[in-house]
Length: 67
Image (spheres, rainbow, N blue to C red):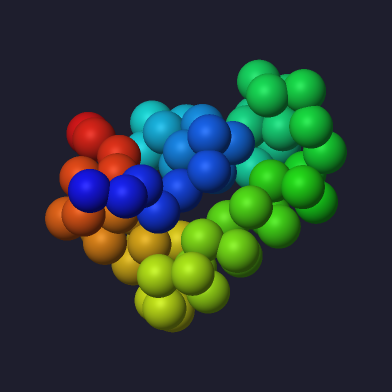
């Protein structure tokens, strides 16, 4: 089965699942907070959901990320 997320998008959402904030994710991945928000926004559009919480639920359902 083809993966939906890029490697970086997966890294961002793996940290979101661990309850990291946008600034914490940016620091952990050594990228800007704007880049983190861009990755989140891209995924939300890609899987056609309304927000990051819905994206997490859908990505877990699709076995793209894990709790």
